Image (cartoon, rainbow, N blue to C red; front, side, top):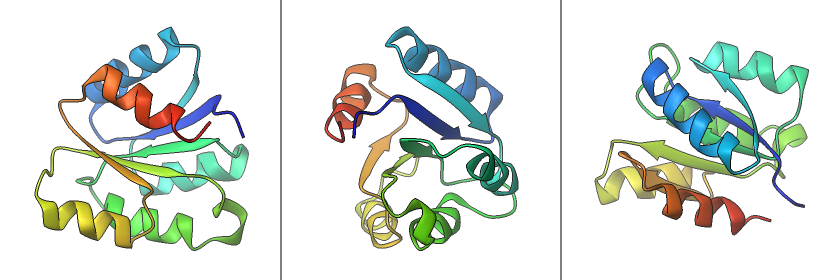
Length: 121
């Protein structure tokens, strides 16, 4: 399934703006959420083709949110890419165990991110 619609979940307005712009310039439709609650609301409104998920957020963190989304039958076919400053191997392993399909470390390399997204096309 080609990736067109991306849900970007990050509590940093700067990061949301930067990544939204980067993705929009490459033709993706981007919706954003600043926390887990808003992300779940967005998912209820429209199913994305892919989710970019920050880890460190107030309330529900990205690991918990990824686990909830990937265990929900409605979203099992939506790949989640963790997009975080947490760069330890243990973080990556834990993210993948929660259901993430890939992992990108901030600051994001645009070409690397686009290549990872295209891998799901």
